[in-house]
Image (cartoon, rainbow, N blue to C red; front, side, top):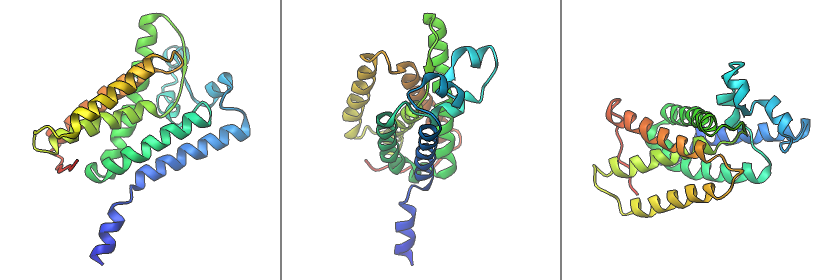
Length: 206
């Protein structure tokens, strides 16, 4: 019985639900239109700066991270979500994992809009990568906090991986790198709040 309970706790339920929702939304978009059609993606809830700022369609800050431009975009994000979710959900718990994911995704959207205002451009943005970068930021915090403040041997390699990911995004003008950076910073700060002020118990073993 105890063995069954241990096995059950290893299943990242919320992560799997998020993946299924993303896949279902993608299939709906493809069957009803096209995920490569920018105008249609705006109709479906992608972030388009004027609609958020002028028409106050704030719901787009949530709907945008359940939409993806094409199968490759979806596939890459869902693989990352599965890997990070498996690592994080057991440590944070289901509710805090969802809070971390949603807040990171929302703040990634906000960061994208702020950056676009700063550079004077209007873009259509969607994808779960901002929320996923939030999970990456949270994992970095847990690699430190979960080892009682000692730097895990995984931290330098993980920082290198994050740096390469962000650098790669900067080389592709079609990637919303502001959302990635914003999501990552949000994930770090949210996880710090969870571990320090809410006093979430963490014993993350890298």
